[in-house]
Length: 342
Image (cartoon, rainbow, N blue to C red; front, top):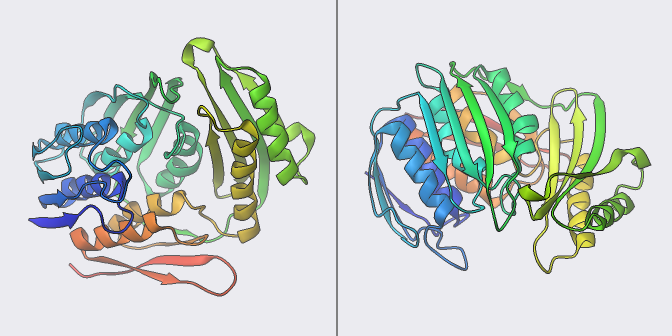
């Protein structure tokens, strides 16, 4: 039984999701205390409960302590069973983070799977749907498994109501190296609004354009979707290269000025573009698990986040895989699978 203190490292829901995924993959049970102990409101929220429910469903796991507000949980995995599954968060909790919990175990299963997940698709503290579609999954495809995703309906905070569909064709993971971005292909910034004033999109884009001042005017475009999918808005800033597409995002909430959303997301993109790194701050920790299970590979990235350091620690705890990190005074950080000790 592996014992985890959920308040250590990143101290949020990522610890719980990673632990569940690793448990299903390795067959090792775990117990976790102080769940989300590093957050203002500790304990599990609805999206964390749904993530563990999903992990238990696909892996025949026995779970104790699973409830909203619970700060301790024990998870005994069974055998991962591919198939058709439907999970609903019931709030604007992230559909993408629920998928993150079960994606890799199902990618390594012995038959295809089809998933429907309902909840938030564009909400704060989680990557948007487009990040999954354009940034993460094309890299997974290079490693072997094929994962197709479809956005059926947007879901914004606080209402939720979004829906994504996923089809997974499993395959063994092949190590790859992701060092260079390759040639630049396209850039764009899109502000999506649903059931909120259209000028919110214009103000976000205007603020973003002042930061990304070398981007052409035509790269900035508002998009209105049906009000029934809102209320809400999302800013997606995308830079596509030969080998990777990076997306920085910002999401509206009551009291947060549109100008701040645009400026913050654009600054993140400007920082990424100035770095020459392959992976941005959100992609880096999501590459760790597939790279570890492939038994090799490397990638360059921007400054390492606490999410990434926490993920490295959890992967080592369950699998023995060690990552080598090369940080120079200038230039991107290099992360590679250094050793598998088990």
